Image 1: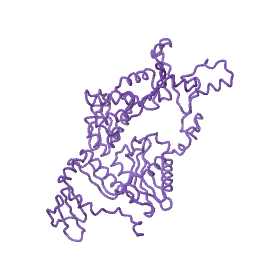
Image 2: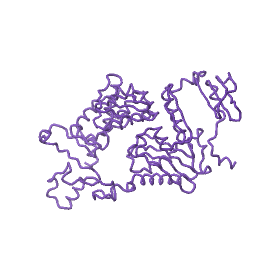
Image 3: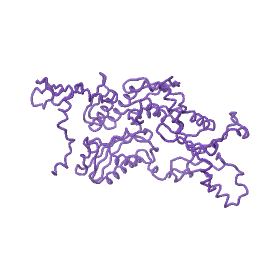
Image 4: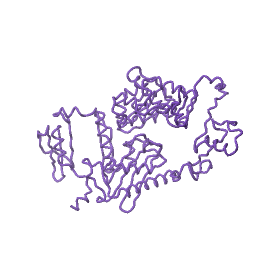
Length: 519
């Protein structure tokens, strides 16, 4: 019994091969190298139809064809060819990462999509699998303490994604999904990762076999540690030290607010100076608190102090550009304020309305995209210089599957050899120049992982495009953009919620405000 807790092999389900052979055309060739000939056996639907000697080198080859051909009821539950293909790619990726000494070859549609030589370094193997973009600026990790070892490669913060599909975790060479280890990885990155972003990472943790239980899940995808807190602390420290050493970011784990305004690099974000002064504030009025005693004036002024780290903005129209208008000219237009570059606030009949700018724009783009997918395609803007996208094999399969839909919403992607595609046009509403790659990579990740809900394919594409291309929190809008955003939101069929079901706005009536102020 003690030996069972010390097993380091992955084990083998003895019933797997006969089970597969019973629902396919199954060919097995094998030789142990002790004789000139090996054995070839062919089964169809579980029945042996051929058995004979075969000349071959030492090793085993298994070929499975016509899967579920004799079980049509089971076959109809298979997903699309591209979806099943992506499952195969993920399995091959995991095997290829864990065994750098082994060569791998993957063919699809009569062509090689992966051809990996054995004996590669982890960084080289990862670049071959996931593309050079994921490995740009990546950091190598190697740490050891007592009976634990950690090695791997950590993607640069700039290569982060909005989905967790680029996180690959291995325990004693076995690919696993573990919430605790994932949390430790994100904690190790700390403030380097914006909220809602996930890093690219391939991490290999080695612990004593007696300290980990791999039998928690039938597929061995989950593991349990005897001292999980110790393992997580080790991973957090290893990630932080590797990033701090390679990227020179040790001070980023301190409080960001330290040193802001000092112009020194000893705290906060290096090289960032606070340039906001009282006169620069868009809400500054010199006569607002005139005549108040100093104590009252200080208390009132503190309500309008700029938060630490907020950059200066000036909403004053540029007179030289012809944008100046007298205040009296605006008297008939509703005033719309943008708060913390996140929310819009405007007076309405009987109260005020607060609008989430990102959710509102999502709803607008979602309904626009649905119309383009079912009616006339969206207008595209040709790029002066096409952007080459170095995709992984899995990402390339997503593009191939959804190309005809991406064209309808304004993206033009052309094959450029292997897993590389040329982005030649983008939707005309993508006004932020240089953001096209981030948007299209985000859409590819969403569609590849099926994270946009359970609706139709068209709804998933529309929801992903809307989420990726919408105005973000922290994006400054000028008064005209605010007005247009509100007008377009309430021209939608369902302006109440974004595609994910979150509210786009809330209304505070005068009765509610009066109650809050005890009137």
